[in-house]
Image (tube, rainbow, N blue to C red; front, top):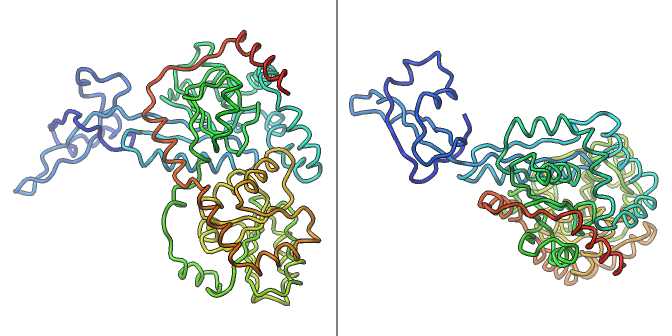
Length: 460
């Protein structure tokens, strides 16, 4: 049976015989033995719990209560780690809501064939490491509003038939997409009147790219106000676009004990803590950065997170063998929230989720080796907000970082600016807006998108 809180005011009834006398009936099937109250839709389900014991100690059967909570499907894609992390954060936020009965997260690429999955997932990883400049060029070239959306749908649809079948069978009330591929497919189904569900699209970077454009949708969620302005020019009504920030784990909004975390990792409270991350996959210039950090004269501590790259971890541990007291070397960890809470500065590539988590933690960033395209745009946002400095060459890292560490007041101001830009409640806000939405879909015709494409081309 779906879990979740009861809807206030839903009818209550005491049912005989007791639950114990129906041992052969599965709990979830009991809903079929009772008539649905007047005014409740077919989607309503009954909630069953044991009734309180009487004065004699005997339970008076079971209490039944009807619920109309929503079924939420969150579709992501395993392209990098950010889209899935955003989906997980949203799932947690939805499960806190009393008006939501069921939440499911799923990876759209798990329903496609190997070739389609390779194109979306593995190709991105390879280009990020061996041809980042090409990736940046492709990002800018493909940011052409309403030009390639129909072609992309024609390419994706034949590979996503199993996903479409699953969605129609599961019958969600609302679908939330944290990647543009499933968003495009679901949007196409809604536009063609082949699916009845609310579609919300969550953009997971600090720049709205044309690949996120969909003809049919209910709501968009973006990271900053300028995205809403840009989207309005592209035909997305402002009232349909909500500036919530990128969804991150709701726990980022909780307070933690800094002394306890420092003790857990063997860190000192009277020295700055640097957090150097190589991402989930262990990519980036981490080893080169560590070599420069070892040479620096300033007194600081560094936590190096190598992700799932065991070879990188071995290399870093060998590099810091002579300065072990200044370094803590980790592999993949689920304690990034705790590490961000105690860090003074994060040294990282500016991925969308990493950037959002750092801002929510009030953690300034030293930007390292951003991939052209979305990471460059994320870096621009951080620099505009005064929450980061950028190191384009690893050779100058000791100089730039040293100047910052020698100026504690500047570092504190960067932390203040980062916290001011943070949106730790983004997931909860998105969950609320989706759960409460009762509106109709916004559907743009092909004629309208052609006009919008011409207008966008005239401005480029």
